[in-house]
Length: 291
Image (cartoon, rainbow, N blue to C red):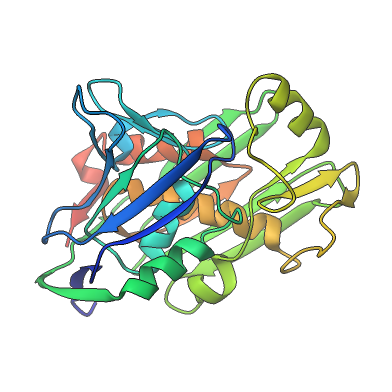
C-alpha cells in the first residue's frame, strides 16, 4: 500500500440550511486545522459549557433516523452522517466544524453540496502520514427492525475499502437493491455522493406528528407514496436508494476516526448497526491494527 498524507482544507468556508428533522436553520463553518486533529464539531451557540464534540463512534448517543454525537456535558450535534461521508470522500482528515444549532443542514439530502463547499475552498496536503485502520478478523453483528425483520452487517479483512450493501423494501418503488462500492475503482464523488435521503409518505406523516422530519420536503428528500415517487424530477440514478444507504454507511464508519481497509457487508443495516459494528471492532485489539 502506498503511503498517503493527511489533508485539511485551505481556507475557512461557510454554508447554511435547515435541519431535516428540527426544521431549524443552522450555519456550518469549516476551518483548517493541524495534523492529527481529526474531525471535531464546535457548537458556537453554546458558551456556558464544553462545546467541542469529537466525531467518534464512542460519542454516538442516538441513531434513530440519523447519527447524533454528544460530549460529556451533553452537548449534541445531530444528523452528521452526510457531512462525514463528504469529508471522507474529499479526503479530509483534519477539520474544525463550527455549527450554531443542534442539527447539520440537510441541503439537498445528499453529500454532494458538502463536497462542493470543501472543494471550493481547496484541499491542503499536510506533512504527516495518514493512519489506516486495517481489519484483521471478520466481525459480525445483527439486530431486528421494529417490524421484527433481521438486519445484519459485518466487516472482514481486505487491502481495499469495499461496501457491499443490500436494501429490501415492500414498496415496489424501492424494492430490493444491491450495490458494491469499491473506493479504489468506483468514484464516490461521481457515483455515490449525489444519492439523496428518502422516506415513505406514511412514515413522514408519523414523524411530523412526533416533531421529526419538520424540515423535510421534496427539495431535500425522495418521497415515496405507496409505489410512486412523488419527486417530479424522479431519481438521479436507478440505484439511488441503496447508494444513499452507502453514503450513510461511509459517514458512520468514518466515525472510526480513520480511513478503513476492510470489506463491509450489510443487509438492511442502518445507523444503529453501523455504530454497533464499530464498537465490536474496537472491543478487542486483535480485531484491528493501525498502519
